[in-house]
Length: 112
Length: 111
Image (cartoon, rainbow over all chains, first blue to last red; front, top):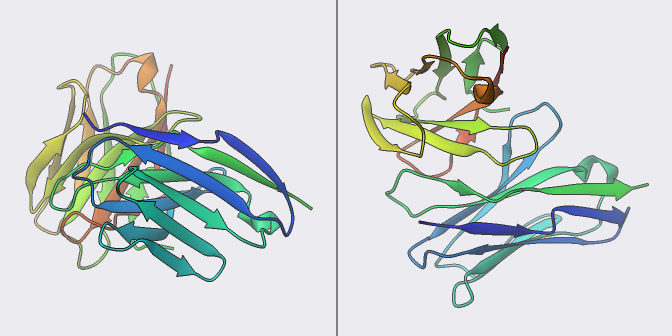
Protein backbone atom coordinates (compact mmCIF):
# COMPACT_ATOMS: atom_id res chain seq x y z
CA UNK A 1 0.00 0.00 0.00
CA UNK A 2 0.88 3.66 -0.05
CA UNK A 3 3.63 4.70 2.32
CA UNK A 4 4.56 8.27 3.30
CA UNK A 5 7.79 9.13 5.09
CA UNK A 6 8.22 12.55 6.66
CA UNK A 7 11.45 14.15 7.86
CA UNK A 8 12.62 15.53 10.16
CA UNK A 9 10.49 14.51 13.14
CA UNK A 10 11.53 17.63 15.05
CA UNK A 11 12.94 20.90 13.79
CA UNK A 12 14.11 23.92 15.75
CA UNK A 13 14.89 27.18 13.98
CA UNK A 14 15.61 30.73 15.04
CA UNK A 15 12.92 33.30 14.40
CA UNK A 16 13.37 34.72 10.92
CA UNK A 17 15.13 31.65 9.55
CA UNK A 18 13.61 29.24 7.02
CA UNK A 19 12.24 25.76 7.72
CA UNK A 20 11.95 22.88 5.28
CA UNK A 21 10.01 19.66 5.83
CA UNK A 22 10.16 16.83 3.32
CA UNK A 23 7.83 13.93 2.53
CA UNK A 24 8.46 10.95 0.30
CA UNK A 25 5.69 8.76 -1.08
CA UNK A 26 5.59 5.43 -2.83
CA UNK A 27 2.51 5.37 -5.10
CA UNK A 28 3.22 7.04 -8.44
CA UNK A 29 -0.54 7.42 -9.00
CA UNK A 30 -0.75 9.90 -6.12
CA UNK A 31 -1.72 13.31 -7.42
CA UNK A 32 -2.87 15.48 -4.50
CA UNK A 33 -0.55 16.56 -1.70
CA UNK A 34 -1.92 18.71 1.14
CA UNK A 35 -0.05 20.02 4.17
CA UNK A 36 -1.71 20.45 7.56
CA UNK A 37 -0.68 22.46 10.62
CA UNK A 38 -1.84 21.20 13.99
CA UNK A 39 -1.40 23.29 17.09
CA UNK A 40 -1.56 21.62 20.48
CA UNK A 41 -5.09 20.45 21.23
CA UNK A 42 -6.50 21.81 17.98
CA UNK A 43 -7.70 20.45 14.67
CA UNK A 44 -5.36 19.94 11.71
CA UNK A 45 -5.66 22.99 9.45
CA UNK A 46 -5.06 22.84 5.73
CA UNK A 47 -2.34 25.41 5.02
CA UNK A 48 -1.34 24.66 1.45
CA UNK A 49 -1.74 21.94 -1.14
CA UNK A 50 -0.39 21.03 -4.54
CA UNK A 51 -1.56 18.85 -7.39
CA UNK A 52 0.65 16.73 -9.56
CA UNK A 53 0.33 18.97 -12.61
CA UNK A 54 2.14 21.77 -10.77
CA UNK A 55 5.76 21.86 -9.60
CA UNK A 56 5.54 24.64 -7.06
CA UNK A 57 2.90 26.67 -5.24
CA UNK A 58 3.39 29.65 -2.97
CA UNK A 59 1.16 31.45 -0.49
CA UNK A 60 2.89 34.36 1.26
CA UNK A 61 5.60 32.81 3.51
CA UNK A 62 4.62 29.22 2.72
CA UNK A 63 5.52 27.26 -0.39
CA UNK A 64 5.31 23.65 -1.47
CA UNK A 65 7.46 22.00 -4.14
CA UNK A 66 6.79 18.68 -5.82
CA UNK A 67 9.22 16.38 -7.58
CA UNK A 68 7.09 13.68 -9.23
CA UNK A 69 10.06 11.79 -10.62
CA UNK A 70 11.67 11.39 -7.21
CA UNK A 71 8.25 11.11 -5.52
CA UNK A 72 8.86 13.69 -2.88
CA UNK A 73 7.39 17.04 -1.93
CA UNK A 74 8.49 19.66 0.55
CA UNK A 75 7.02 22.42 2.67
CA UNK A 76 9.05 25.61 2.87
CA UNK A 77 8.35 28.28 5.49
CA UNK A 78 10.34 31.50 5.19
CA UNK A 79 10.81 34.25 7.79
CA UNK A 80 9.56 31.94 10.53
CA UNK A 81 7.65 33.42 13.45
CA UNK A 82 6.90 31.98 16.93
CA UNK A 83 3.28 31.38 15.87
CA UNK A 84 4.55 28.96 13.23
CA UNK A 85 5.44 26.57 16.07
CA UNK A 86 3.20 23.51 15.65
CA UNK A 87 3.16 19.99 14.29
CA UNK A 88 3.05 19.82 10.51
CA UNK A 89 1.67 16.81 8.63
CA UNK A 90 1.95 16.01 4.97
CA UNK A 91 -0.64 13.81 3.29
CA UNK A 92 -0.96 11.99 0.01
CA UNK A 93 -3.96 10.85 -1.94
CA UNK A 94 -5.12 10.08 -5.45
CA UNK A 95 -8.04 12.11 -6.76
CA UNK A 96 -11.20 10.06 -6.87
CA UNK A 97 -10.01 7.64 -4.18
CA UNK A 98 -11.04 7.81 -0.61
CA UNK A 99 -8.01 7.71 1.58
CA UNK A 100 -5.53 10.28 2.80
CA UNK A 101 -2.24 8.76 3.95
CA UNK A 102 -0.58 11.03 6.47
CA UNK A 103 3.06 11.39 7.31
CA UNK A 104 4.24 10.95 10.88
CA UNK A 105 4.47 14.67 11.54
CA UNK A 106 7.19 17.25 12.17
CA UNK A 107 7.26 19.25 15.38
CA UNK A 108 8.52 22.71 14.46
CA UNK A 109 9.79 25.00 17.18
CA UNK A 110 10.57 28.61 16.30
CA UNK A 111 12.85 30.10 18.90
CA UNK A 112 12.43 33.81 19.63
CA UNK B 1 -12.09 27.93 11.28
CA UNK B 2 -13.92 25.34 9.19
CA UNK B 3 -17.66 24.74 9.38
CA UNK B 4 -17.11 21.17 10.56
CA UNK B 5 -18.33 20.43 14.06
CA UNK B 6 -18.01 17.36 16.26
CA UNK B 7 -19.64 16.20 19.46
CA UNK B 8 -18.92 15.50 22.18
CA UNK B 9 -15.61 17.28 22.80
CA UNK B 10 -14.43 14.80 25.39
CA UNK B 11 -15.66 11.39 26.44
CA UNK B 12 -14.60 8.86 29.05
CA UNK B 13 -15.74 5.27 28.63
CA UNK B 14 -15.00 1.94 30.26
CA UNK B 15 -13.48 -0.99 28.40
CA UNK B 16 -16.20 -3.08 26.74
CA UNK B 17 -18.65 -0.22 26.38
CA UNK B 18 -19.94 1.28 23.16
CA UNK B 19 -19.58 4.86 21.97
CA UNK B 20 -21.13 7.06 19.27
CA UNK B 21 -19.34 10.13 17.96
CA UNK B 22 -21.01 12.70 15.75
CA UNK B 23 -19.86 14.98 12.96
CA UNK B 24 -21.62 17.75 11.07
CA UNK B 25 -20.04 18.46 7.73
CA UNK B 26 -19.38 21.86 6.24
CA UNK B 27 -22.25 23.30 4.22
CA UNK B 28 -22.12 22.06 0.64
CA UNK B 29 -19.89 19.08 1.42
CA UNK B 30 -21.09 15.55 0.63
CA UNK B 31 -18.20 13.46 1.94
CA UNK B 32 -17.13 12.71 5.50
CA UNK B 33 -13.96 10.86 6.44
CA UNK B 34 -13.11 9.62 9.92
CA UNK B 35 -9.61 9.39 11.36
CA UNK B 36 -8.07 8.14 14.59
CA UNK B 37 -5.13 10.14 15.90
CA UNK B 38 -3.14 8.59 18.69
CA UNK B 39 -0.97 10.88 20.79
CA UNK B 40 2.10 12.01 18.89
CA UNK B 41 1.07 10.35 15.64
CA UNK B 42 -0.54 11.33 12.37
CA UNK B 43 -4.22 10.69 11.68
CA UNK B 44 -5.04 7.14 10.60
CA UNK B 45 -7.88 6.66 8.12
CA UNK B 46 -10.85 4.70 9.49
CA UNK B 47 -13.44 5.03 6.71
CA UNK B 48 -15.18 7.48 4.45
CA UNK B 49 -18.82 8.11 3.57
CA UNK B 50 -19.83 9.63 0.27
CA UNK B 51 -23.49 10.44 -0.31
CA UNK B 52 -24.58 8.07 2.46
CA UNK B 53 -22.54 5.10 1.24
CA UNK B 54 -19.28 3.78 2.69
CA UNK B 55 -16.64 4.71 0.14
CA UNK B 56 -13.61 2.99 1.56
CA UNK B 57 -12.18 1.64 4.76
CA UNK B 58 -8.79 1.55 6.45
CA UNK B 59 -7.29 -1.19 8.60
CA UNK B 60 -9.77 -1.03 11.43
CA UNK B 61 -11.83 -3.97 12.78
CA UNK B 62 -15.59 -4.31 12.14
CA UNK B 63 -16.41 -3.02 15.62
CA UNK B 64 -15.70 0.40 14.09
CA UNK B 65 -18.80 1.27 12.08
CA UNK B 66 -20.49 4.36 10.82
CA UNK B 67 -23.18 5.93 8.77
CA UNK B 68 -24.00 9.12 6.97
CA UNK B 69 -27.36 10.84 7.00
CA UNK B 70 -29.22 12.58 4.14
CA UNK B 71 -27.94 15.96 5.41
CA UNK B 72 -24.40 14.49 5.12
CA UNK B 73 -23.72 14.52 8.85
CA UNK B 74 -22.14 11.34 10.09
CA UNK B 75 -21.69 9.06 13.07
CA UNK B 76 -18.81 6.84 14.12
CA UNK B 77 -19.72 3.91 16.37
CA UNK B 78 -17.20 1.83 18.24
CA UNK B 79 -18.30 -1.35 20.02
CA UNK B 80 -16.48 -3.37 22.68
CA UNK B 81 -14.10 -0.52 23.49
CA UNK B 82 -10.48 -1.40 24.18
CA UNK B 83 -7.84 0.62 26.01
CA UNK B 84 -5.99 1.19 22.71
CA UNK B 85 -9.06 2.95 21.32
CA UNK B 86 -8.13 5.96 23.44
CA UNK B 87 -7.32 8.68 20.92
CA UNK B 88 -8.49 11.86 19.25
CA UNK B 89 -11.17 11.05 16.66
CA UNK B 90 -11.30 13.49 13.81
CA UNK B 91 -13.81 13.82 11.06
CA UNK B 92 -13.10 15.70 7.88
CA UNK B 93 -15.60 16.89 5.33
CA UNK B 94 -15.06 17.58 1.67
CA UNK B 95 -16.88 18.11 -1.58
CA UNK B 96 -16.26 14.80 -3.28
CA UNK B 97 -12.97 13.54 -1.90
CA UNK B 98 -10.31 16.24 -2.22
CA UNK B 99 -9.48 19.13 0.11
CA UNK B 100 -10.62 17.71 3.40
CA UNK B 101 -11.39 20.11 6.26
CA UNK B 102 -11.17 18.79 9.77
CA UNK B 103 -13.45 19.20 12.73
CA UNK B 104 -12.07 19.91 16.22
CA UNK B 105 -12.13 16.24 17.19
CA UNK B 106 -13.49 14.16 20.03
CA UNK B 107 -11.01 13.07 22.69
CA UNK B 108 -11.97 9.55 23.76
CA UNK B 109 -10.45 8.03 26.88
CA UNK B 110 -11.07 4.35 27.61
CA UNK B 111 -10.36 3.20 31.15
